[in-house]
Image 1 (cartoon, helix red, strand yellow):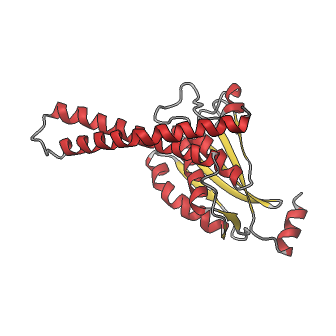
Image 2 (cartoon, rainbow, N blue to C red):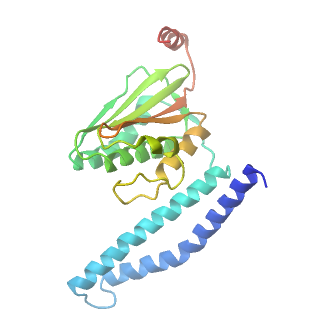
Image 3 (tube, rainbow, N blue to C red):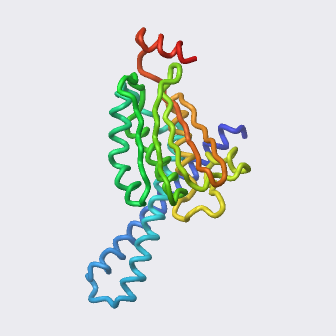
Length: 244
C-alpha cells in the first residue's frame, strides 16, 4: 500500500467513524437539553451543574467530530476551495469583525493592518475565514497579556497574512510538527483537539499557498500564510519588483 492509499483509507475510516458517532451524540445532546429545560421535572442545583458539564463535553465532542470529518474530506479531495476574486481588505475586515469581540473580551489588544491598495486574492471566502479564525483562536489560547496583531502585505504574486501574539510561544522541538494532526504543546490550555492548525494547513495548501510559524518561548508566535492574488496589473508588478 502506497502513502496515498494509506491516507485515503485513514480518511475513509475517520469519516465513517465520525458519521456513525453523530447519531448517538445528537440523541445525548437532545436528552441533556430537555432535562435542562425541565421537561422531566424540576432539578436541584447540583443536577443542573452536572448536566451543564455534560452539555459542554457534548459540544466539545461535536466540534471534534466536525473537525475530523473536515480533515478527512479535505485529504480525500472532497472539499476543494471554491475560488473567486475577493478584495483582500474586505476579506480581512469581514473575518476580523467577528473575532474582535472575542479577543477584546480576554483583555487583549487586537490590531489589524491591511493597506487599502492591496490587490484582490483568488480564494474561497469561508475557508480563508476559517483559517483566520483558527489562528486567532489559537493565539488567544496561548496569550494571557498583550496583543494579537494581524498584518497583511503584498509578497511577489501572493498576499501574505501574519498573525502575531505576545503569548507563551512554542518549544523549538514542536515547531516542525505543529501543523500535524493531534499535536498539542504541553502546558497549553485545554479545549482543543490539535486539529485547528492541521485544517488550516490543508486549506492553505489547497489554495496553492504556504503556511509557516516562527516562535520563541516566552516571546510569542507569528503564524504566516500566503494566498495567490487574483490578477496583476502593472502598478502592482512594479511595486512587487521594487520590494524584492
